[in-house]
Length: 206
Image 1 (cartoon, rainbow, N blue to C red):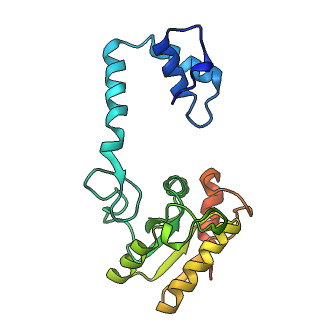
Image 2 (cartoon, rainbow, N blue to C red):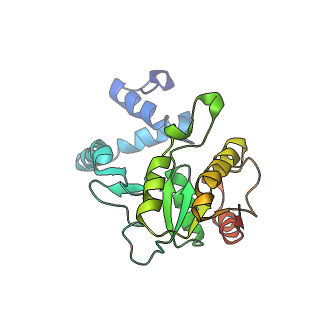
Image 3 (cartoon, one colour):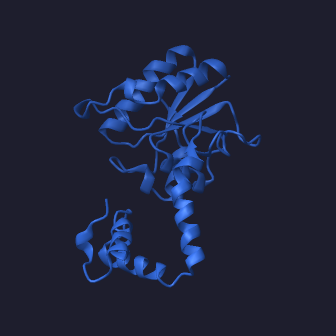
C-alpha cells in the first residue's frame, strides 16, 4: 500500500498516487511527488489510458511457459519463438532482469532459463523451490549441447552453479560458468553490458 505519510498537503487521491510511485525502485519522496504532480497535467484521457494499462499489465504480461521470461499471455517469449536464436545452448539466470542485461550486451544468441532465485538454505530455499524441474524437462525433450550458468557470483549463486553442474554434467551436457568481468558478490542485474559481454565470451567449463 502507498505511504500516506509522504505528503499530507495534497488531496487524498493524489497522496495515494505519490505513495505508489514511492514504492518503485530508485524513486525517493521528491521524485514520487514530481511524478504525481506530472500526472495532474495530463489530459484525463491519457490518465485513464495509463490506469487501464497498469490494470491489465499482470494479465497481459506473464511468465514464458518455456523459459520464464516476460511474455504475452498464452504465448512464448520473443526469444524462445525466434528462429534466429540457437536452440542448442541455454543460459541459466536467476531473474528475468538478468536476461535483459545480457541481451543488451549482444554477446549471447542462445535461449534462456529463469530459475526464479538461487539456492539459499539459510532462507529455506532448496532445489524444489527453483524452476529446475522445468529445466530438466527442456534438456530431456530438446537437443542441448551447452548449459551456461549465469547465476550471480556470490556464495548462493556459486552453490547454485555447482548444484546444476553436478546434476547435468553426468548426462553428457557441457556445463560452463560465466567468468571474467563480473566482480565476486556482484548482482548481475546491475552489471553493465560490456562487463556481461566479457563474462559470456570468457565463460569456462565447470
